[in-house]
Image 1 (cartoon, rainbow, N blue to C red):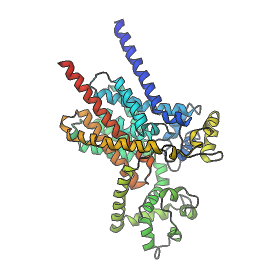
Image 2 (cartoon, one colour; image 1 turned 90 degrees about the vertical axis):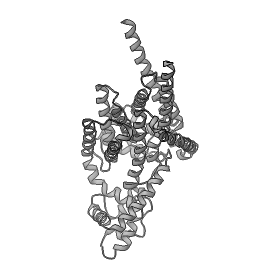
Image 3 (cartoon, rainbow, N blue to C red; image 1 turned 45 degrees about the vertical axis):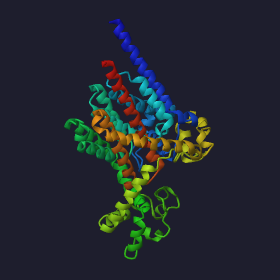
Image 4 (tube, rainbow, N blue to C red; image 1 turned 135 degrees about the vertical axis):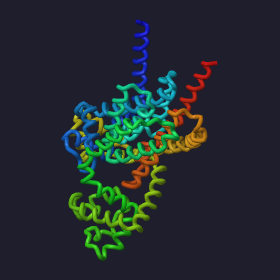
Length: 450
């Protein structure tokens, strides 16, 4: 009995140590930066959690998580380590389920190390941004549908899923789409999807949506108008209708920016010249409604969305938004205010000294080459579909659908950005590595029988 208990304790500590090492591997970009990576949105998230107050353009959930995991402003290093640990823990459990109860710790550690240096995963994990929770939500769904976890672990997965979905405005619709797709394709994956489990996941997504009612009400017309602008639909509509419509935006129809980001955030944008987000809401909603009641504009919007979805699928650059934030900038002032003991470390961060996009140009090229090399292997798995384990089929379907829907979501309701692509594209090499792990486990099992 003592030997059995000693072995159990030893295995648990072995697992915890491997998870800690994997988490540190996932923070390699932060070690390079000498501080957790931040971008312009980071300040809004931090401030929302510490005030606390719901921002006008995003939920408060991630802001509260920042406050919680940083121990009320002690250190952002604790936050990014918590993010890394959650991702590592989920990947460990996926690999364990695929390995058929065979030794999996060393394999999981190796996979996470490869992903840390050979994919965008570590960059996503290392940022003070809710992007990491997109993949956390997907991996939670995979583990719940594999039906190999005990009751306590399932409860934890449901909790992770809820907070992951509630962390970003795009997540509820994205996850509902994935759940519906998996349900429709359940015969292909042989996934057993009990009505109770599906109901819980859909209910959690709905509750997460409820927490976003206020920011959605304040911002959806702004973001959608920016999307229409970038697709060229808005300019065409104004050109054809400003002669009969007395819109304030008509005065700027010939000086509209090309990019949605410039329309949303540039102080000189027409948006900021005609009023604040609340003041322009009636006009913008009227324009949006008019556009989507005319077949010609709907067709133009749909065509542009398909093109932008394809563009987003190949737009997977890390480093987007990780520019310098000098003293006096909003991000710098926010960091100094809520993390005063780390202000010196932040000001000395690499991203405040060198152009990050130039510094990561080579890694971006390497990541793209790795993805291109993984695509034939991914395609080969679909050719061998009948020979795959059901757990592997489920992982493939959820990941592939997730990547496609994420790109569609960005294209349809937002803008194209390398950051949006890299938060999901790492799932491609992960699926390949998981398949190799699963195959090795099967071969070892067959060898043991012989």
